[in-house]
Length: 157
Image 1 (spheres, one colour):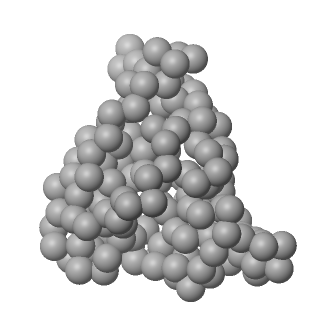
Image 2 (image 1 turned 180 degrees about the horizontal axis):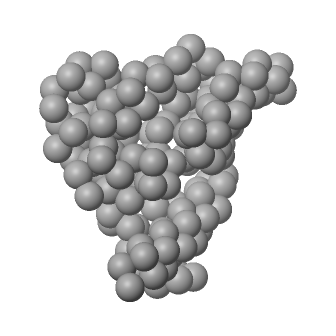
């Protein structure tokens, strides 16, 4: 939202956001599912992703160990009947806390996902604190959703 409130805590459970992407007059519904492991088996993820057009798998870019949890979330997301046709992003959060040494190690961990041709996932590192790459992510996501919508409409003809 362009504001940083240090009092805001990590998501617990579920959070919902409506985002207007001005350049294309698109409204995104973003469901923020907490990354805690117990939500993986709760069925909440399965219920919430029904009908989703995109997945944003987020990790803490300043904590390389957090990217290892992506495998578990991908395993659950692959159950989505349209997973292969769904837009997917790997989103590194807290970019403002990443130093150059961490970035090198992070690139190696991320390449596992980016090099997988079956996954077809994009990667971006953002920072809410520095308002870095957030508009770029939303703009690119909006473009991808428009392209997906056009493909779906043309395949229905």
